[in-house]
Length: 157
Image (cartoon, rainbow, N blue to C red; front, side):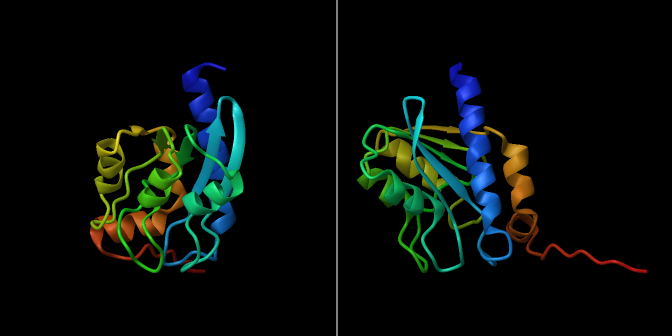
Protein backbone atom coordinates (compact mmCIF):
# COMPACT_ATOMS: atom_id res chain seq x y z
CA UNK A 1 0.00 0.00 0.00
CA UNK A 2 1.15 3.52 -0.69
CA UNK A 3 1.52 5.96 2.20
CA UNK A 4 -1.66 7.78 1.22
CA UNK A 5 -3.63 4.55 0.71
CA UNK A 6 -2.32 3.18 3.99
CA UNK A 7 -3.33 6.36 5.82
CA UNK A 8 -6.85 6.10 4.42
CA UNK A 9 -7.16 2.41 5.31
CA UNK A 10 -5.99 2.88 8.89
CA UNK A 11 -8.19 5.96 9.35
CA UNK A 12 -11.15 4.00 7.98
CA UNK A 13 -10.50 1.41 10.70
CA UNK A 14 -10.36 4.16 13.34
CA UNK A 15 -13.72 5.48 12.10
CA UNK A 16 -15.15 1.97 12.31
CA UNK A 17 -14.00 1.74 15.92
CA UNK A 18 -15.42 5.18 16.71
CA UNK A 19 -18.88 4.01 15.62
CA UNK A 20 -18.85 1.57 18.53
CA UNK A 21 -19.42 4.56 20.81
CA UNK A 22 -22.94 5.27 19.51
CA UNK A 23 -25.39 5.95 22.37
CA UNK A 24 -22.73 5.68 25.11
CA UNK A 25 -20.42 8.70 24.80
CA UNK A 26 -22.82 11.64 25.02
CA UNK A 27 -22.10 14.50 25.58
CA UNK A 28 -18.58 13.59 24.42
CA UNK A 29 -17.81 12.84 20.77
CA UNK A 30 -17.39 9.36 19.33
CA UNK A 31 -13.69 8.80 18.64
CA UNK A 32 -11.66 5.84 17.37
CA UNK A 33 -7.89 5.37 17.38
CA UNK A 34 -5.52 2.89 15.75
CA UNK A 35 -1.83 2.58 16.65
CA UNK A 36 0.32 1.31 13.77
CA UNK A 37 3.94 0.26 13.48
CA UNK A 38 5.02 -0.30 9.89
CA UNK A 39 1.99 -1.89 8.23
CA UNK A 40 0.73 -3.65 11.35
CA UNK A 41 -1.97 -2.49 13.75
CA UNK A 42 -0.55 -2.93 17.25
CA UNK A 43 -3.34 -1.25 19.21
CA UNK A 44 -6.97 -0.22 18.82
CA UNK A 45 -9.35 1.74 20.98
CA UNK A 46 -12.45 3.88 21.04
CA UNK A 47 -14.14 6.18 23.49
CA UNK A 48 -16.59 3.77 25.11
CA UNK A 49 -18.44 6.04 27.54
CA UNK A 50 -18.46 9.59 28.85
CA UNK A 51 -15.98 9.92 31.70
CA UNK A 52 -14.07 6.81 30.63
CA UNK A 53 -10.68 6.58 28.90
CA UNK A 54 -10.51 8.32 25.55
CA UNK A 55 -9.78 6.39 22.35
CA UNK A 56 -6.08 7.28 22.31
CA UNK A 57 -5.52 6.01 25.85
CA UNK A 58 -7.43 2.78 25.14
CA UNK A 59 -5.41 2.18 21.96
CA UNK A 60 -2.10 2.90 23.71
CA UNK A 61 -2.99 0.43 26.46
CA UNK A 62 -3.84 -2.17 23.83
CA UNK A 63 -0.56 -1.52 21.98
CA UNK A 64 1.80 -1.80 24.93
CA UNK A 65 5.07 -0.34 23.63
CA UNK A 66 4.11 2.26 21.02
CA UNK A 67 7.52 3.95 20.70
CA UNK A 68 8.00 5.31 17.18
CA UNK A 69 4.53 4.24 16.03
CA UNK A 70 1.81 6.21 14.23
CA UNK A 71 -1.55 7.02 15.83
CA UNK A 72 -4.60 7.44 13.59
CA UNK A 73 -7.29 9.39 15.45
CA UNK A 74 -10.72 10.44 14.18
CA UNK A 75 -10.73 13.68 16.22
CA UNK A 76 -7.85 15.92 17.28
CA UNK A 77 -6.42 14.70 20.61
CA UNK A 78 -7.55 16.74 23.61
CA UNK A 79 -5.00 18.88 25.42
CA UNK A 80 -6.95 19.90 28.51
CA UNK A 81 -7.85 18.29 31.82
CA UNK A 82 -11.50 17.34 32.17
CA UNK A 83 -12.74 14.09 33.65
CA UNK A 84 -9.66 12.49 32.10
CA UNK A 85 -6.07 13.71 31.54
CA UNK A 86 -5.04 15.14 28.14
CA UNK A 87 -4.62 12.62 25.34
CA UNK A 88 -1.73 14.69 23.98
CA UNK A 89 0.20 13.91 27.17
CA UNK A 90 -0.50 10.18 26.79
CA UNK A 91 0.70 10.22 23.16
CA UNK A 92 3.87 12.09 24.11
CA UNK A 93 4.59 9.76 27.05
CA UNK A 94 4.19 6.78 24.71
CA UNK A 95 6.74 8.39 22.36
CA UNK A 96 4.46 8.26 19.32
CA UNK A 97 6.35 9.57 16.27
CA UNK A 98 3.42 10.54 14.04
CA UNK A 99 -0.23 11.40 14.57
CA UNK A 100 -2.75 11.42 11.71
CA UNK A 101 -5.97 13.27 12.59
CA UNK A 102 -9.19 13.09 10.59
CA UNK A 103 -10.70 16.36 11.80
CA UNK A 104 -9.67 19.31 13.98
CA UNK A 105 -11.63 19.45 17.24
CA UNK A 106 -14.15 22.35 17.07
CA UNK A 107 -14.25 22.53 20.88
CA UNK A 108 -12.86 25.99 21.79
CA UNK A 109 -10.84 24.32 24.57
CA UNK A 110 -8.91 22.32 21.98
CA UNK A 111 -9.37 23.81 18.46
CA UNK A 112 -5.90 23.16 17.05
CA UNK A 113 -4.08 23.36 20.38
CA UNK A 114 -3.78 19.57 20.66
CA UNK A 115 -2.03 19.33 17.30
CA UNK A 116 0.12 22.38 18.10
CA UNK A 117 1.28 20.78 21.36
CA UNK A 118 2.28 17.59 19.52
CA UNK A 119 4.12 19.52 16.78
CA UNK A 120 5.96 21.61 19.40
CA UNK A 121 7.16 18.35 20.96
CA UNK A 122 8.54 17.13 17.62
CA UNK A 123 5.70 14.81 16.58
CA UNK A 124 4.84 14.71 12.86
CA UNK A 125 1.13 15.65 12.60
CA UNK A 126 -1.17 15.47 9.59
CA UNK A 127 -4.82 16.48 9.52
CA UNK A 128 -7.71 16.02 7.08
CA UNK A 129 -7.64 12.31 6.21
CA UNK A 130 -11.31 11.22 5.75
CA UNK A 131 -12.45 14.49 7.34
CA UNK A 132 -16.00 14.31 5.96
CA UNK A 133 -16.55 10.84 7.40
CA UNK A 134 -15.18 11.96 10.77
CA UNK A 135 -17.53 14.96 10.85
CA UNK A 136 -20.46 12.68 10.00
CA UNK A 137 -19.56 10.47 12.96
CA UNK A 138 -20.38 13.33 15.38
CA UNK A 139 -23.05 15.62 13.90
CA UNK A 140 -24.43 16.66 17.30
CA UNK A 141 -21.03 17.40 18.81
CA UNK A 142 -19.88 19.31 15.73
CA UNK A 143 -23.00 21.49 15.64
CA UNK A 144 -22.99 22.12 19.39
CA UNK A 145 -19.35 23.23 19.32
CA UNK A 146 -19.58 25.28 16.12
CA UNK A 147 -22.88 27.14 16.55
CA UNK A 148 -23.80 26.51 20.17
CA UNK A 149 -27.08 24.71 19.52
CA UNK A 150 -27.95 21.03 19.81
CA UNK A 151 -28.51 18.83 16.80
CA UNK A 152 -32.23 18.01 16.76
CA UNK A 153 -34.15 15.54 14.63
CA UNK A 154 -37.91 15.43 14.59
CA UNK A 155 -40.49 13.40 12.78
CA UNK A 156 -43.94 14.66 12.07
CA UNK A 157 -46.46 12.06 11.01
